[in-house]
Image (cartoon, rainbow, N blue to C red):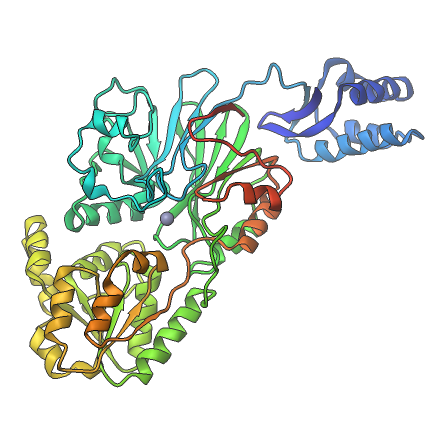
Length: 526
Ligand SMILES: [Zn+2]
């Protein structure tokens, strides 16, 4: 049993053992004349004043243990806001944390924070799993027709009472970190009376997915937050931090709850086009973090050949420039960093980038938050219409079809002049049809610019090979390298670190001395 130091904002640091506090207190009250120092030890609480700190600094004790404990106290006082409180932690209210899913896997993240009073229950992320219990890839298609109770029984929906449409709502709010389905893909089952907080970019991308990717996420009542602007949810204060990630407008959250300061990283990295954000965060971090809930996707993964987005752009450029025929690039239309790299690589190689209607719509919709991303009407960009995409877009707003028409390209034009084209492709029946149709017009190459795992799971490689198209992988991860995880921990100096979004939570313990490894569904009092 020990004693801790708190200020009005919560936990500051470990002060001393029971015995250590008693020894220090006995000694200090005997030798000091400073009334504020005496009061601090008598009442266990005092305003942090120059007199208090000077009074403690003036004490020189020959006993090394007592002297070290006083030094520690002085260091901790320097971190307190206006008041210092000695506490054994028993009367301190603390929220309860439950990671419903994500302690031992990447994907399906769902975190709950419940205030001590029980009046505020916050859910952070509600994602689709990426793997099944036996670690095989999760396929939403096989569960799409299941009812809500079935999804709960099948453990696809995490068991959170008061969260779903079939229950009486008892959750104060749902907070989403970013627009990747493994963080928000189960949102459609959340009770529509529960408020949702998301960034503008996340909302826009989720709306695009509703149109093109057959998701049916309810966004009508979504409240959008501004990065770095605190807002309140029940008893909690939340400050979003813009992070560098492969999804644009991704957020981390500082959550101030019952005197604890919790930092949830979401997914992040420091080697994308917004890598500066991680640098800024580590240079000017939020202070007094008691719990850091940090992603660890890259643990156990190879960092790959391309360390950052710039090296990806360079490699794309070199390959496209050196190739005399058509280039297919397979990537996600929602990875804006990558679309910028592909556009620049194509332009600097003197080639035209052909995008599909879905990509044109993503870029158009996100232009308000990212004014520098390429657009359908930019020089060197053309749009290939497919019946399927045109139908989807027409259902949403027919005017958009006419808007993008200015940049429309016909397949015949690509067939007649394939060598100066870079075609953004997807692993879909439609694109396989295009590749088959263009087979004889040009000697094509394919570039796979996504996570290697997607290629492994598909027969795309075989398909391309059967058409004589060599495939090259050029990609950099959307997740933080081990060195970047360490940099963030060094800067935030959290009291405790809780791993999430990783297949190897035990590796955290090899890297950091202060790790709390949880299991899914295990509730802890912070
Ligand atoms: Zn993500």
